[in-house]
Structure formats: C-alpha cells, structure tokens
Length: 328
Image (cartoon, rainbow, N blue to C red; front, top):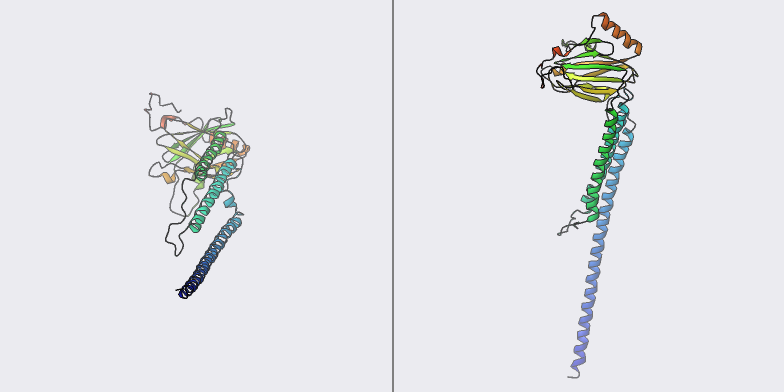
C-alpha cells in the first residue's frame, strides 16, 4: 500500500501536467486565430477606407474642375447677371440654396456609406451587428439641424421676396400689360400710346420670327411698374432673363416693380397653359436708351395708336359685383 501510493500520485501529476500543456497549446492556437481574424478585419477596413478616400477625392476633383464653369457658378440659370436690379439677388439665393443642399446631401450620403461599411455583418459572423438605440444626442441632432435649415431657407427667401415685391409709389414708367389668347396688349400709361399684338406666326420655314413678335419697350436705368391683367383666362408674364414671372388673372391686377439695368433684347412667353396655341403666346422685351424709348413712343403715336386699350375687349363682362371695370 505504501509503495503504490507514491506511484499513483506521480502518475496523476504527470497526467495533470500533460493536460495543462495541452490547454496552453490550445489557448495559444485560439489566440493566434483571434489575432489573424483581427488582422484580416483591419486589412479589410483599411481597404474600404482607401476606397472611400479615393471616391471622395474623385468627387472633390470633379467639383473643383467644374467650379470654374460660369454655368455652375450661377446654378445653370440664364446668363442674367445685372439684367435688372433683382437678378443678382435671385441668382445669389438660388446658388446659395444649392450649395447648402449639396453639402447636407454629401454629409448625409457619407454618413450612410460609413455606417453601411463599418457596421455591416462580416463573413463568419452569425449575430447581428452592434445596434444603436435611444441615443439622445443623435436624435436631437436629427431634429435640430433640419429645423435650422428650414428656418434659414424661409428667412432668406422671405427677405429677398420682400425686396423684390417692394412697391415703388413713384415709378418713372408705368405700363399695363394685358394677356389675351394668344398674344399681348401694351398700354404705355405715361405716354398715352398703346400696342396691340397678335400671336406668333409660324410658317414652318427656317426664319427668324422675332421681328413679328409683340415687343415691349423699356428705358434702361428707369424704375418701371408693370400692371398685369388678362382679358380671358389665366396667363403668366415671364421674361426669362428677368428670372421672375407673375400670373395674370381676369378681373384682377398684379404688379411688378423693377429697374432694367442692361440694354438688350430678351425673350418672353406665357408660362401658364392657356389653351390650344399657348406655345405661340410669345413676346420680347427691348431695353433701350431713353432716346430710343422716346422715339418708339413717337412712332406709335404717328401710327395712330393714341390713347389706351380699354377692357371693352375683355371676354368676361359680368365680373362679380356688377362692375366689369374692376381690375384689382
């Protein structure tokens, strides 16, 4: 009994030592596997980051190269800088809005791409990626930032609209523009002469029809008030390079106030679908010197276009209130 006991104890110690050695080897193997997996993940993340950096650099290069384009600088609007006293303000509001929106969009798209890559389920994983819930700072950010953007857009738009719509009680020139299917009448109120137009005439031949279009003359650098009304249906007075339009309603008068500041000929059209020949309801505006404007007024008077075109040609003669002469 006494001889076998030490032998059994020694045998047990040998078995325990072998088990400890195997356990250590197994732990070392698992550690190497974890290390290899971590290294592979780091390499994968590094490749993804390099890819994102390459895409971001490419986009920045494209934007930098196209930033020199005049079309991009004015937000692809017509080249209307300095045409009236309002056009630069409108271009500024338009381009600034797009810059802010693109910046917010780029940040949002970048964060979404980052979250998709970093928190994706990787190969070999069976559990869901780390989930994020009830994060008060992020939820506050998602609420406050859009609110600031909306209020900012509203404030700047309201400021510019107030300036554009500001009434001038003593304009240098007052003109009444009357829309009709499918042309325009112009009453030059100060000079007591008028012009009555007909719709654009297309013959199908390759020709310049601008010489036959109704033409509104405006003196450069003079404050102008235009009274807008309609003889029949709703129209819209739109001079493209003025970057502004206003609707024209039967029985109501709208007003536009501006100062043309650059001489030239500008295309105009009706911007409200008004019937079969809506596309032919064209006109042009000529901003000319004061001398040329006076000469055109004298030319209209010499043709016998003296006085004002009244509302007797209006289609609607039974406006509410029993007074067809009410125009706003």
